[in-house]
Length: 64
Image (cartoon, helix red, strand yellow):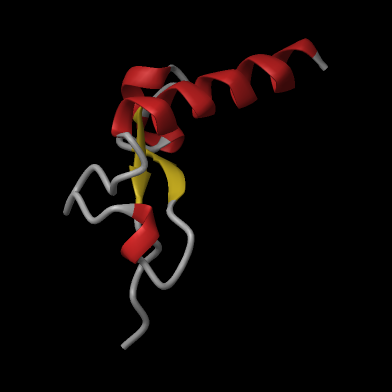
């Protein structure tokens, strides 16, 4: 349970750092059609961590 609380707090820190903007294109959440989400910059399967410096607030992928 403690790990889940830590992960939620870390995700919130990443969201605050981004100031509710996509960290790739800088689009503010208020102008996006879909909710921004937290994603790993380096995927965990490639050695990335759950630490805040490896998380980014991002727009969801656009469907073609």
